[in-house]
Amino acid sequence: MDILNQLVGSGSFRAVKEPLAFLRVLEWLFAIFAFATCGGYSGELRVSVACANKTESDLKIDVAFSYPFRLYQEVFTAPTCEGKRRETLYLIGDSSSSAEFFVTIAVFAFLYSLAATVVYIFFQNKYRENNRGPLIDFIVTVVFSFMWLVGSSAWAKALSDVKTSTDPDEVLLLISACKQKANKCMALRSPVMSSLNTSVVFGFLNFILWAGNIWFVFKETGWHSSGQRYPQENMEKQPSGYNQPFNQSGYSQDSYAPTGGYNQPEDVSQQPNLGQSGGYPPQPPFNQTGYAPSAPTSFANQM
Image (cartoon, rainbow, N blue to C red):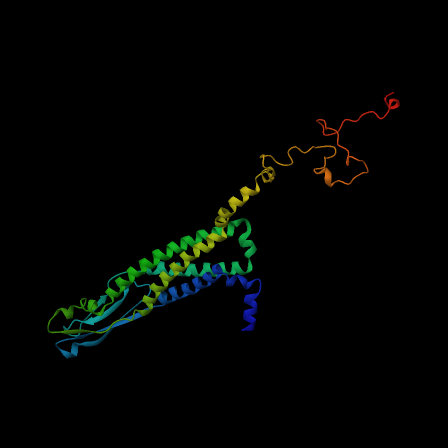
């Protein structure tokens, strides 16, 4: 148990704890239950025909049927109560298309969910590369959700028809000897349909799982997060000039700063005294280039 916890807690198996991978595990488990309870079914019913002549009676007539529920091919014999002659009869109905469609969806859903779980664990980088993996995963998840809904609904309707066709009272109506009042026909045993009912339940549970997993796969595509990052990206693309602080006059403090030369100190009183009586000597006015005009130091220099 400790080894299993270490594997799950490692980097490769950590994806199993995430909702996306966890739901995939539930999907392939539920898919197994869906096609196992339907595809592996076989049932049997029993009726009896008591003829007026007791020697011609048959008190144990077993009628068997199984997946894929081509009931028109299920054959059984019954006495005619007219000597030793027996008649060959068939059940009514064909639900093979709905049953096979349901089982096919379950098998492919099992295979895909198992493969997706392996990809989430061992090939997560490849899965997220170029956003192609999440996009394909999203489309497949939507398709399987729809197919589970259609397949489960069709199989639920087909199962209702199977129950009607395999009802012992309905089977007795097929036997000609039961139409004569002198003979007594009875339904002894009905087929057990609990596993087929379970398959329908698991079919709709699979639909709920796959439909709920659409949201988690959608988040992996990046479409959800791109809508949230859009305002932030717009703010980052604004020019830096809008971020400068403004003074009370509405202009930036650096708008009138000279581009060249020496900047004039903001507060003269804070500058050190250089020994003159007037403190720091006043600065000459600046020209348009930002430099103060320089005067000749001597007459000789001018020459």
